[in-house]
Image (cartoon, rainbow, N blue to C red; front, side, top):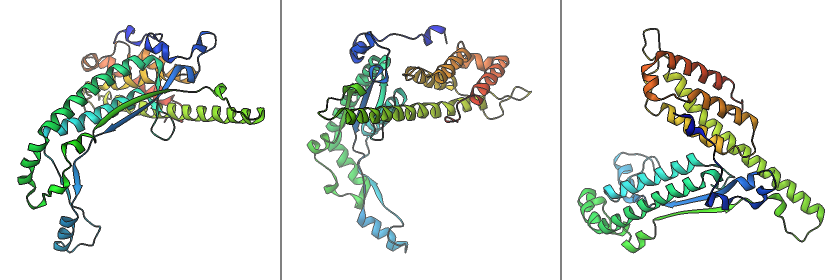
Length: 314
């Protein structure tokens, strides 16, 4: 990996629009450096519990009610499976690009990642729309074909119409700015305003700390995996299995996320990301595979960084 992959960039274009104009004259804040992003995906799984079949099985097996359940797959469609897989990819990308913000599913997206995020979500949205359209077109014939596969478990009442089914699919992403504590505009006394401001600032700090902790904990797993997979014996054989081609990329992705989400310039986060950048610059899967020296040196440095991670992450 070349050094240029790690370069910091200033927000441009739409990213600049997401930054509060106050940054022109004041130091950046969390409110001016990130957006709250909400992701909503709806994909009907087309599976259903069959109460009648469940009771029949329980009677046949002399089992008590509640000890077993018969769930049937209503459709057998490669297109539908592709939509379900795409849903998982979108949720994973959304999670890996953002940090938690509160307890209601909102996530925080750094402004520097806004354009990349919008572009990738746009690609996913196009795939989602196309696959949904394909599935709705073949849905009636898929229902006819699955009838033979389900046998006596088939119940026509389980299947919504094409129109009803279409309304169950959805993909929506929305953004909203983070209000600054100075944005309170309430017709209340100065003391009450100050108390609300202090409460809000504490909520912001707590949410940000929770998000940073989440990223740190997610970073620890790939680092430990890298350390274990780079552990070779004196005969040049891995002690805990061969490493995969993503061994470096998995760490790099989280280091980049941690760097981008260091919105208050925390020196500990800056240190960890800088050290990992230095260790992984020029390190690739192929070089690790072919160089025992590089494996040993990289493992030693990774172990040192793990041992020096903040206790809250490890």
